[in-house]
Length: 184
Image (tube, rainbow, N blue to C red; front, side):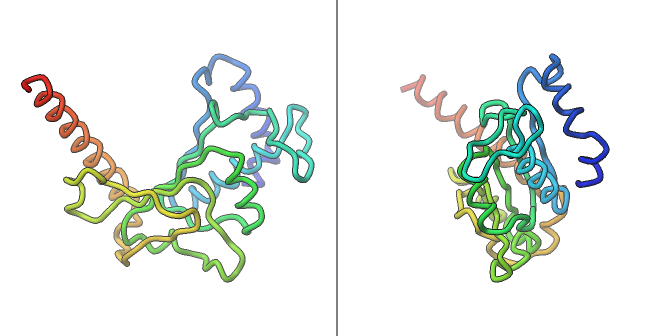
């Protein structure tokens, strides 16, 4: 990440946001180590003001990019990427969703005892047959790793497949409920 930053990434993002290219805001995503890098980038963007200077300790997030309305981060299978005090600060100021696949062991490391902590709103995609229930994923505590142990669920394709199936099933349930309401 630091090499991208030193190569002028902040200025390029600033130019994109000033143009019409990002009319709907900026979204940063990543899986696994890419998720950790997306989190570090999001945290970095949140600490910069319009002139590129760091926001003072205890200050509000800078306006370089960034309000939760136009800047969001989505990660999949991300390991803990920030120290606890930084994670708590950003958790209070930034919009981030962290997707966890049931059994993905990478999202549980490194251990919190080393001072690392997750940040952002976390959702665990539940195991297998639970896609047919109303709650196809569940909100879990901020520093939650995952339940179960199924290393195959760390790959990106189980994340995308399971989320897509969940969305389709939820859509079907809503259509069925709407149809029943119209009949009744």
